[in-house]
Image (cartoon, rainbow over all chains, first blue to last red; front, side, top):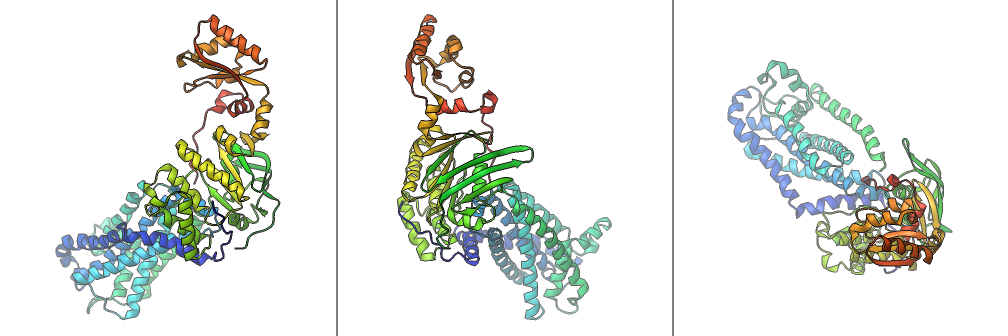
Length: 270
Length: 332
C-alpha cells in the first residue's frame, strides 16, 4: 500500500449529499431504471384511459370537459407513487448490504444518506410527472390556469412524492427486505387509486363506501390537483380553501407521523 | 479535516460493559492498542467481538466504561473517531450497482477528496489491489475475494489511523485470504493500528502482534501467540488414525489420558485427536501402548507444542454447549 494523505479538505455535508445522490441517479441512465420510470407513466396513462374513457365519459359529463381532463391528476399521482416506492427498495438494499452501517462509522451526518435517497426519489418523481403531463396532453388534458397554478400543481405532486418516498425509505430501512417490499408497497396506492374520485365521481360508487372514497387522501389530492389544473367553462371549480385544506392537512399529518418514525428508525443502532 | 489530534495509544478500552436487555454482551473489558500494532481479537461467535468493534467505531455506546480511538472519546467525540478510522464489517459494504472504480471515487469524495484527487486515488488503489481488469465492471459481478478487496480499498482512500477488520476473511478461499493477510501486514509499515476480529486461530497467529482471547463478553487471556501457547503449558500429543472412523474408538481406548474437555471437542469433522501430554514422552508411550493393545492402526503419532486451537480449548468455557457456534446475527 502506498502512503496516502490523511487529508479530507472538502468534507462538507452538501458535497457528501450530492455524491450520495448521484450514486442513485448516474446508474439509472444505463440500467434501464430511467426507461422504466418513463414507461410506468405511459403505462398508467394507457392502462386507465384506454379501457375506461368510453364508459366513464358519460359518468363524468357533468363534471369535466373530457375524461382525459378528469383522469389526469390520478395518473400523475399513481406515476409518482410508483417512483417514490422504489426508494424503499433502495433503502432496504443499503440497509441489508451494510452500507448504512458503514456510512454511520464515517464522517457523514446521520441524515445525509436518507436525504440523498429522497433527493433521488424526487428526481424520479420529476421524470414521472413530466412524462405523465406529456401523456395527459396527448389524450387531451390541458392546464387552464396561469403559470402560478401550474407550478403549484407540480410542487404539490412533488411534495406528495417526497413524503411518500420518505415513508418508503423508513419502511425499507426498518424491514431490510428488498424483495418482499416492493409488491407490498405497490398494492395500497393502486387500491386507493381505484377507490378514489380520480377514476369516477363519488356518486358512482356504492353508497356504503362513499364516505371512504370521498375522504381518503388520494381523493383529496385529486380534488386539489383538479382545481389547480382548472378546466374549460363551465367546469373547473375555483381553488378555494375548502378544497385545499384537507390536502394540506393530510400532508401535515403524514409529516407528523414520519418525523418521530424517522427518529426511531434512524437512531436505531445495529 | 485536519490531521487529527496527537495521541499516545491508538485504542484505549477501559472497563467497558454493554448489555442488550437481559443479555450481558461485554463485562469489564479493558485493553489497549499501540500505534502500528496489530491486535487479534479471538473468540467464538457471540463472544462479543463485534460489540467491541461497534463501540469503538461509534455505532454503539457502552453502558459503562470509556473507550477512545486516536485520542478521541468514542461517546463524546464521535466525529473525531469517525475521521480517524476505517471499519470493514463482516459483510462487504459497497454499492453493488457501481463499478469498482466508481465505488472508490465515491468513497474518496465522501472522505472529502476533490473529484480529480478521488479519481487519481481510485486508480492507484485499483492497481495496488490488483483489480485493474475488473475496475470498470459492476461490483455485483465480483468474486468474494475481489469484493472484500475493493471493500477494504474503499476504506483506504484516505489514510486511517486505526483500522477495524471484523472477520475479514470469513468465507474466502485460501488465496484471497492470503492476499488480505498480506494487506494487513502492510498496515504496520504505515503506523496504522489494526484491530482484527477472527474465529480463525491461524489468522490471529499469522497476523497479530498480540492476541486477546474473548469468551462470553470477557477477556480470558491476552498475550503474544507464544505466550498463550506457553500458558497452556507442556506439550501436546497428537494422534492421527489411519481410518477416521476409528476416532471414537481411539477416544474410548485412551480413557483417562484424554481429558473430558478434549473429548467433548471432537466432532464428525475431526481428523485427529489432540490432548495435553503432561508427562511428555511418557504420555505418548502410554497412549501408543493402549492403542497397540486394542489393535488400532494409526497413521501418525507426534509430540508437539500446543497450537492456538489447543490454547483456545484450554482457556474457554468447560461446558461443551458453550462452544456450539450460535448463528451470527445479521449486522446492519
